[in-house]
Amino acid sequence: MAISLENEIKSRFKYSIVCPHCGCNKTVKYGFFNGEQRYRCKECRKTFNAFTGTILSWSHYKDKWGSYMEIISDDMSLRKAQAQVGVNYGTLFRWRHKILNRLYRL
Image (cartoon, rainbow, N blue to C red; front, side, top):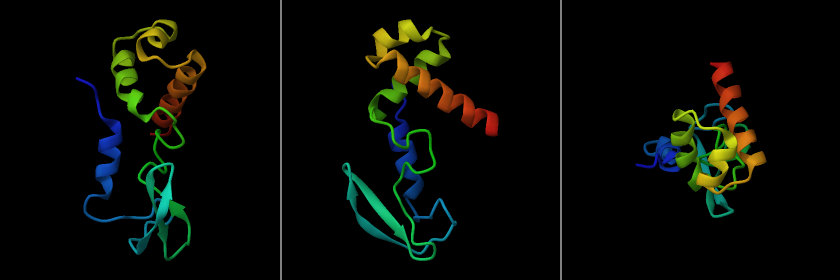
């Protein structure tokens, strides 16, 4: 069963859209970027989408994160994970460090 991180992150806007920069809920839709709905905060005037401030922000392979997360839990090496996920070794290395940096901040 693949973890759908993309759906989990998008569900944070299910009831109200809150700016990740200032925490204000006065937002408006502000077009699309790479197929994702953008929003603009009326207070700080910054734009964002559902992935802003998450480990999936600026990720090109959002659909493959779930399978990578399952492989990490099996304690598999990056070289073996590269073959299973179908993503470059360097990309998996950056993903691992995004996760480690996020955990370090907790």
